[in-house]
Length: 76
Image (cartoon, rainbow, N blue to C red):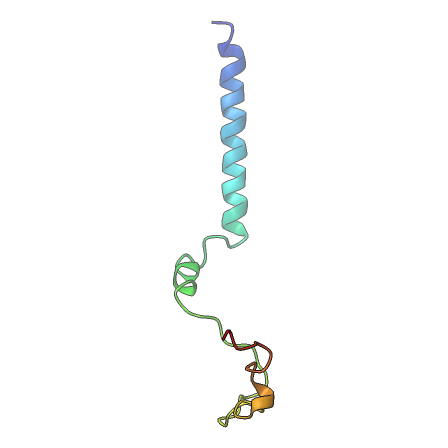
């Protein structure tokens, strides 16, 4: 029974600490946008701004110097 003299104040202290934490979170706006994070994960991020790729072939894509055909010997 002597342990109750320790457990009851400890339970009240931890409950008050939890209540203070909840009130702090409530005042700091933690519960303002509950659906924002759930919907934000469904959408892709915008691509980073950069140069617009050209619609033509890449330089050196059609000539023999641009290919790696000469760097590998013929297996025969």
